[in-house]
Length: 291
Ligand SMILES: Nc1ncnc2c1ncn2[C@@H]1O[C@H](COP(=O)(O)OP(=O)(O)OP(=O)(O)O)[C@@H](O)[C@H]1O
Ligand SMILES: [Mg+2]
Image 1 (tube, rainbow, N blue to C red):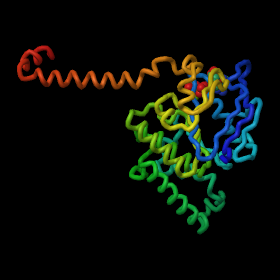
Image 2 (cartoon, rainbow, N blue to C red):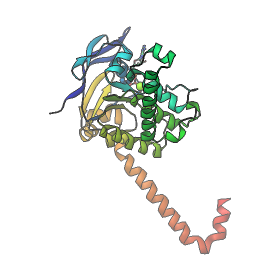
Image 3 (cartoon, rainbow, N blue to C red):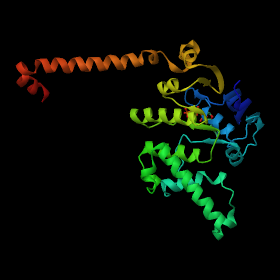
C-alpha cells in the first residue's frame, strides 16, 4: 500500500476573471516520480505556487503526509516540500556553498541570538550544516566549485545548485519547475540520473517539463494540464497514446521524432561513408566543391 506524500483536493486558482487552475485533484505517493505537462500557460507553475504556499488557492486544500498545509512558503518548506523555480533564483553574489547553506536554515534550530553571539551551540550547528551542505554538493557533482560565486556558474550548473539548495531543507517531496530548460542533451541526461538518484534517497519528485523524452523516461505517472484542468493522468505509455493529449499538446510530430533523429543520423553516416569511399578518386573535385 502506497502512502500519499502530497494530496491536492479540488484546487482552484483565479486571477480576477481568469481561472488559471480549475478543480485539480492530484496525488504524489512516496517513492514516485510524477510529471506535470501541458502547453504554455496551462497553469502548471500556478499549480506549483498553490502547492508551495506562494499563492493561496481560491478553493481547495493541499496536504502533506495527511496534514493540511497552511499556505505560507516557509511553513510548507518546514513541513517537507522543497522546490526549484522556472526562472533560477539563486543568490548570485554568494558562493555555491553559501547558497546551499541558505537552504538549510529551516532545518537548523539555532536562533538569531545564538548566531550573533556565535556560541558553542551555533558553531557546532554551523559545522554540521556545512558538512551536510558539502555532502549535497558532492551528490550533485559541484563540490569542486564550493567557493565559486553562483553567478559565475554555467547555466546547467546553476540549475543543479538550485536542486542542491532545495535538498538542503531535507524534503520528503521535491518540486522541480522545468529542471532541464536551457540544458544541452548531456546535461539533460545527467539531470535524469540525478532525479532517479534523488528518488532512490527516499524523496518523492514532482516535475514540470516540456522535454517529453525526459518526462516519459523518468516518470512513473504523468498528468496533463490543459487550460487549468487535468485532462489525463496515467503511466507514460497511457499518456503518450491518449488521443486527447496528442491533439492538445504533444501533436503528431512527437511520435515520429525519435525515428526522425535516428534516420538523420543514419543518413549522415551513409553520406560520410560514401564520401570516404569516393575520396581517393574524386579528392580534388570534392575539395573544389567545398569551397
Ligand atoms: N500572478 C498572476 N496574476 C495573473 N495571472 C497570472 C499570474 N500567474 C499566472 N497567471 C496566468 O495564469 C495562466 C497560467 O500561467 P502559468 O505560468 O501557471 O502557466 P505554465 O503552465 O507554467 O506555462 P509555461 O509552460 O509557459 O511555464 C497564464 O494565463 C498566466 O498569465
Ligand atoms: Mg511555468
